[in-house]
Image (cartoon, rainbow, N blue to C red; front, top):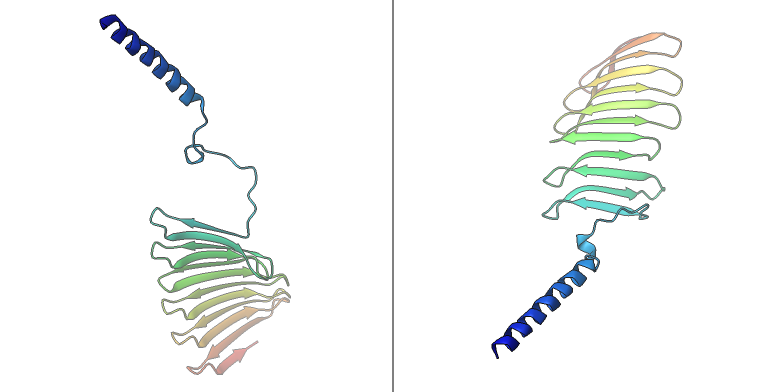
Length: 170
């Protein structure tokens, strides 16, 4: 009986080793494999952290232009990039922000907002080549404007608290 017991154990050991070898040849489950895709086609992507909070999203706007949005840990948009009407970049932090846009007509615009979201500084170059810098007060009213037309002619504007022109020098 002792010899039979050890033979059964030996057969079970050999079968276990064979079974283990066979299991190792079976492909791993999909979640354990890392696959590199050549292409992914979708209308929208969402990137989330380990807790499921949104970190970024990429989508297509109704006009067909792409849109990318990056979020803060609290879920607030901190940076966005779109091609709606031309490249447009927006950066924000606790209400303060900066916007940069280049339009299809050849003009470009850069603006800075304060913590309340009010435009405070604006710099633009129009499609004719004129450049302007405008400064705004805390209510968002224009106070100072400086410019240079495409032909080089300078201009200066000063505004009162209601946004009306006090002084203009072309």
